[in-house]
Image 1 (tube, chains in turn purple, red):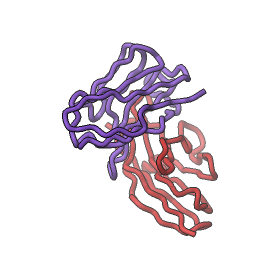
Image 2: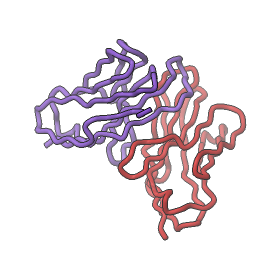
Image 3: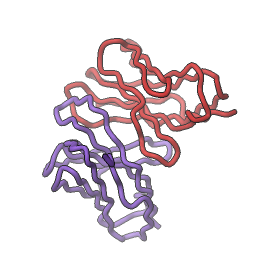
Length: 116
Length: 114
């Protein structure tokens, strides 16, 4: 198993550009999520999905869109990039769907995004 | 809502010394507790988790954590650290019977010096 994969590893954008961060998992996990990591802030949840066709907002959803058309893929779209979106983005997945899941979340290696 | 406080943002220690990374949480319901580790330029991986039962939980790489319900704490310990333990450590909670959403602390950067 490849686990959770993310592409690209690095990206530089200009303000106002759009792009999609890709995330895929091959573990048949129902739950997938996107986090951003900023120095001194820990990880903050952007969006998450409990299964194909179902998404919801996390703590910091503004400026990002997601969709989940398949179990495997969960892309994150930046509609109009801003310098405040400079961050490291992590995708994660887990088996759990039922409330209060205790399943381990598996993280991808991250995408380092710089917006100029 | 849940919150997690990691009391130290940075912890420098010498190799072979013991270390404790502190984590306190706040929640109106019972929670499950996790410690994740992030090595430089990598994603996060699970170190250990507390679900129920014994309050002392053993994880990978010789780490252990103790759940203290009365003090709402879940401190991480290792009796003797190695240079390779240099990493950032994150405490996280999920409410029991609640959502899937992990709530993370801000992280503690452990630096092990020779």
